[in-house]
Length: 144
Image 1 (tube, rainbow, N blue to C red):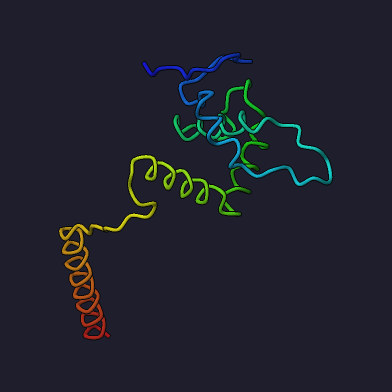
Image 2: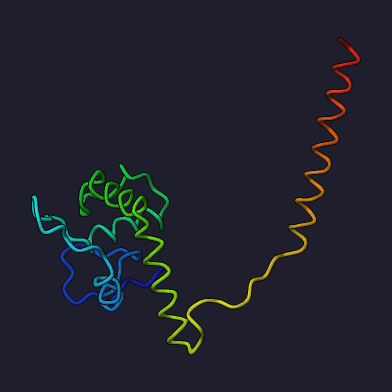
C-alpha cells in the first residue's frame, strides 16, 4: 500500500497520488498566475494538479475521476492548456535544474548516452524492411 502524503488540513479523502504540503510549496510559485482580468479563477490549482496526478497514476479515464475532485472537464481543460503552452515542460526543466543544483551538479547535463544495441536493432530492421518491399515490388512487376 502506498503512503499517503503529509497534508496539514485535508478537505477531502487523501489519495496516494496527492501532493504533500512540501511539494505544493515548491510547485505553487511556478504555476501560471491568474490573468488579472475577466472572470476570477474559482478552482483550486492544487486540486487540479492532484486530479491530473490521480489520472496519471491510476490510468483511469478523465470521466472516471472521483467526485471529490473538480469536474473532469475542468481538470482536462487545464491539462491540455498547460500542455499546449509548454508549461509542463517548463515546470519539469525548472524543477530538474533546481534539483541538480541542490545536488551540486551543473544545471544542464554534460553527458548523453546512446544504447548501441538499440541503434543496431533499428539499423537491421530498416534494412530488412527495405529488402522485403523490394522483393514484393519485384514479384508484383513479374506477375503483371
